[in-house]
Amino acid sequence: MLFKRKFIIELDTIPETNEDICLAVAEYCATYNLPFEFIKRTHPLITIIDGRKYKITKCFTKVHRINLWVLRCEEIKI
Image (cartoon, rainbow, N blue to C red; front, side):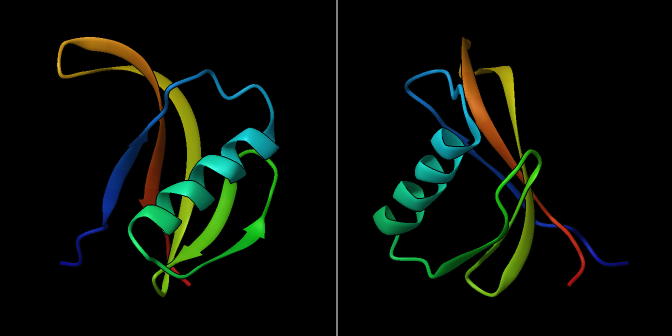
């Protein structure tokens, strides 16, 4: 059985446009020195981060007992 890799990117502000989401992903990758490439820049975003393909969606969720906006990144098949 193969397991899919998932992670979230916590956001400080509400992502109002697809460009806001792209900037947040680019900032995250720059912070952790990860190579990335956008395949699709509209919701849901498709990007390759560190050689793995991800579907990225925005959502409002509870993290550490605080409600906030996050980007949910879920690995998909290449």
